[in-house]
Amino acid sequence: MSVRDTSIDPRLLQSARKEFMDHGFLKADLKTICDNAGVTTGAVYKRYKGKEELFGAVVKDCADILDSFVAVRTDMDFSGLTDAEVRNTWIMNEEALLDLFRTLWKIRGDFVLLLEKSAGTVYENYGNEFALRMTDAYMEYYLEARKRGLAGIEISKVEMHVLCTSFWNAIYEPFVHKMTWKEIEEHCKVICRFFDWTKAFSIN
Image 1 (cartoon, rainbow, N blue to C red):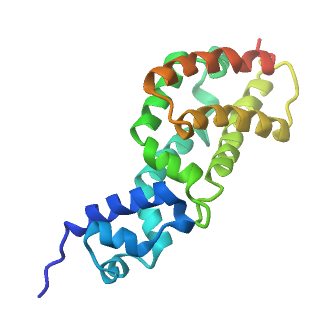
Image 2 (cartoon, one colour):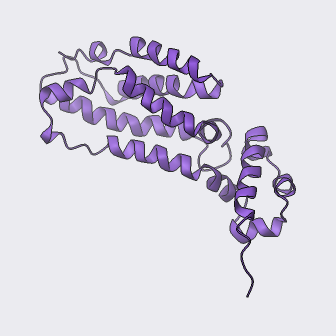
């Protein structure tokens, strides 16, 4: 009975991660990935259906973290929240935003793969799709604020999507442009000043 060589998997993923980062999914070469990992293409096909499934394995942990982030913010039960708590969800909190940046900093390499190197895979529109999912979440919070008389103006879902896309691009771009952590800390302060949701929605 043969014993699976478990040392292959981390080497393969590490090699694939570098090749995808250097060349993007479409131009990444499976043979180069295998050569750099010291494995045969047969070893890859024993584990994955092909290059796209290998890409998925590389970014899986990152995608799972981001999926969890969205899940926590959707299907919210507002019944236990006071008006003050609903209002506070729209106040930009620098420390809370910095916590988000800390999470993304830990997965920044794979995050950039999802955003910039995934053309040709199921993830190729990841940034836009993430913004759409967050638009749905933001609309839930906005409609609750509106229902309680806390939001003074009408916002359409299209307008919300435009705003959310702008906001999340401001979150994505520091990683795409390889900002240092110090630069991200300063960027976080700028975002908190720039995106004043309470004024945008006339939260009283």
